[in-house]
Length: 87
Image (cartoon, rainbow, N blue to C red):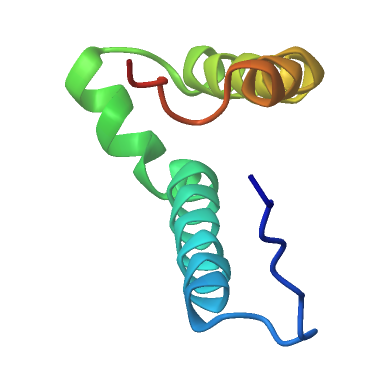
């Protein structure tokens, strides 16, 4: 059988730009929620009875872990992909 090869015209599809826009919005929301932690520090401390130092240490630990684990989670995402394979 002859294999049909599509030629790339050099123009990106509208779906590709939709993925870029959705990724931008998702990252903006994720970083916004993450770094707005300081705004909610006092109410969270009052609710859980924790002091400022303890909550700041928790946030710092989570931030450091997310950046240190990035290479490994990136490799896992490259190896297994973003969604499970269907049979």
